[in-house]
Image (cartoon, rainbow, N blue to C red; front, side, top):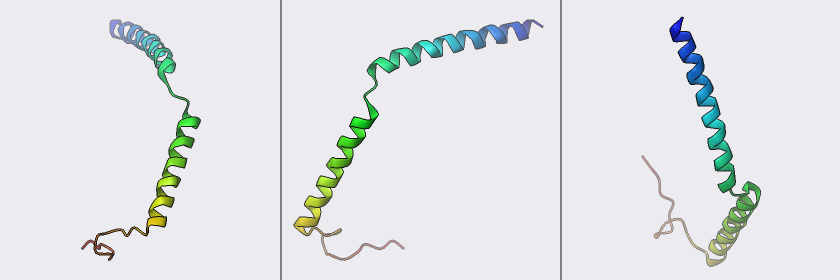
Length: 67
């Protein structure tokens, strides 16, 4: 019986601490949509630059094949 009480207390303390940590982390979280949009457009820009420059995937101009 004592083990059940200890488990319940431990679980309650863990849930409280987890909630506190989530609240603290929320203050430092970046807005996901803006960050994803910026990264996405940066990737598009880099891709377009590579396409315009005629860059190949390898220095020899041939596709690298694995075994």
